[in-house]
Image 1 (cartoon, rainbow, N blue to C red):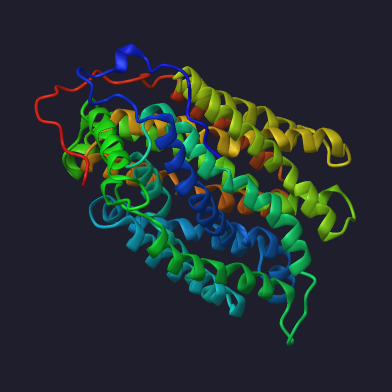
Image 2 (tube, helix red, strand yellow):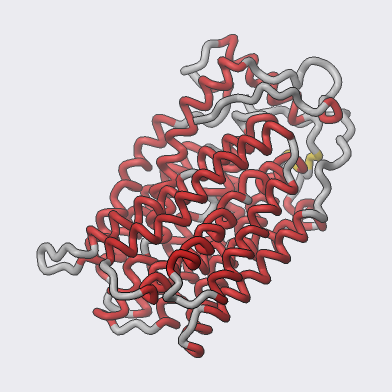
Length: 452
């Protein structure tokens, strides 16, 4: 899934001495083969449990009488739970144990996701979605930090890409699978209830497996030989020495760069979730088609996103360039939203082309974006900064769906809402281009050690 790059690292980024020499290709492949397929699977399950509300929303509205505003609030309140526990969860992965905390999180959110199958009231819906977000808090930014334990700068964007392939894959398989599950009516339970139940239990199983499969640090990896463990640890220690260490949470909060990245991520996530969670409802405007047909059309933007993720991650690592590899997908997504807001629903081919461009923006900006963040900072401050960016930025995941629900409820059209999301993507892309490609190297006086 990850092919280590043959490109030479930028000489300007090389620290003195041999400590930062990258690990050999064989070791890097071995690490990628062990960790990335499994992390892909866990994040796929996490994302399915987060976004399956997009497919159940129409059926819940019919059976429970939920309005667009209720559904939009329930879709978005997930991110308030996410926000409250994000930074503590990220710190636990950095300072305690990734495998233990991931195991606990996955088991908890799996049980909560299954409980959504028993929702009867709007308040119950809100509370379960809130607790689902709280249970997942720290998972994604924790994985961003966790990958820095195992992958050097030259491979990090592709490692992130490999993990993030689970996001478009969740929509690709989620549409057809959800279309099938929604037709079920076993044991007097509606299909949307079965959908929540069937997509929740894999998280519980994977939570148990995570405890035994994942390893916190290279020095603890019994699946590497002693020589491989030493080689990888020394390589990562050397690279860590040139990052700017932010030693405390307070220091991270005082970094203007961190707050700029919070705004960028907020705007991009607002568009990604606003579009993604309302896409099945928007596709209903194309005409009287079955849920399965709409599921396949809904998968199209994410097939495009999957392919663009692979390319952007490879190209960004190959060239070492991050900013334009992050900004261009956002600009393409803005074009797609412009098409969606201007083209009438009966022009299906053009509209689906616009949706495909939004699919590029939704996730392809992430490898470059998170590779930039891990290039800038190290130490405890990196865990705090990544948690802060993801927690505050993911409030865009509340704002986008809720905003669309309100605007659609008042105008009975998605066009105005997509125009708002378009402006957000344009601003996010422009702000990316104001970020430095890299910060000046810190003094090598006393590098913080990579955990052993």
